[in-house]
Image 1 (cartoon, helix red, strand yellow):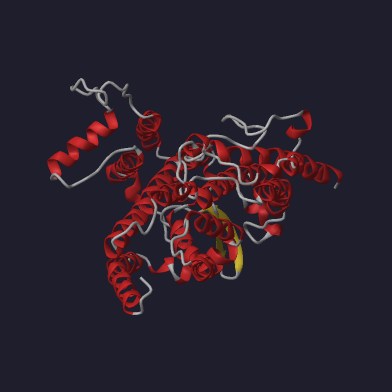
Image 2: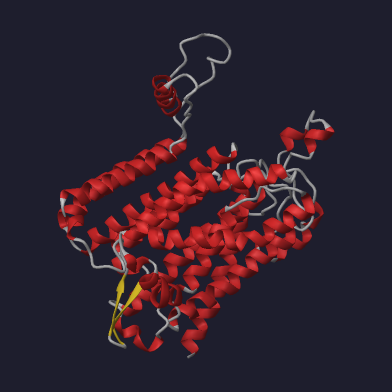
Length: 450
């Protein structure tokens, strides 16, 4: 008992330290931020740091006088009064939010560990011995999911602040998911298998769950699916310019040029700027090459690690593809960006880490979580646009905590158990989406709300 309490105390201290790095990343990874109030910042700091400022929670109360200060000082010089309101600045309660984040991590990490040790993810603490590699699997779940929840917390706050989700969040999450799930296939979410009313086994769920594993994933078709999945992800994540304004041929030419950044042939001032391949492009290409090598190696091995890698790769692609199609169709229907591209990359990460089934449930749950705030925000400010990323992250966290009753007690049989018919339902929903959104937009115009 004392050993368990000591672990909780250590994890509380680690959680507080993690919270300081979450606050650092919120400003360091943000796109429209030049300076940071965090004492651990890599960007220029807004305030000199003393020794006690490096202790979790303590520094933020003394930094409350920074409220209202610009996070983009270079844009303030020469800006008109109208433009100043669009320049990001620290809110009045930024220090309170930062304090709450560090306390949340300090309290949440030991609670999460206690939850896993008590069988929270399976709902059956007395049957944890049915897990393959029981203690190791529980620790891997705890560390793996803690890292993912931390990344989602960073991404959610940044998206809330500036409606962007940085690649540092999503790409890092995908890499962590790939490494963990290949190294320890049992790190996938648990699926409970019953023999009548008796719990017979606890196995990691996969791409085919809750149905039996299809043998085609071992065939060349399975290999091709994984290769296409990683290539699709890389093509979407790489920063590029796509426009059909000048025709398909020119669109492809512009896209390639925007990725490779060749030296301009003209000698004017604009052309003289140094051009180089974007860092994200280099990292994405490196990950893609490693993924291609790993795919061939694991497919040839044809063991549990291949099924795990196959599942995470195809789930990643399906989650990203579905969100991307919703973004395109919804944007076409309303004539405006209805879903940010950061939400697409976030769903790539959620699909890779938790599976396409989990990602689908996240995408269904998130709008219900956001609708109350969306109505409140519209009534108070008249603003209908809101960041969707925080609600996707909140939905992922809720589904993870309530995974056992949601998956094992209901959706695995009632929804995903219907098999291929589910794909037809999803396809029908995608086709109906622009029609429904167009009708809603028409109604808004009729009532003068557009």
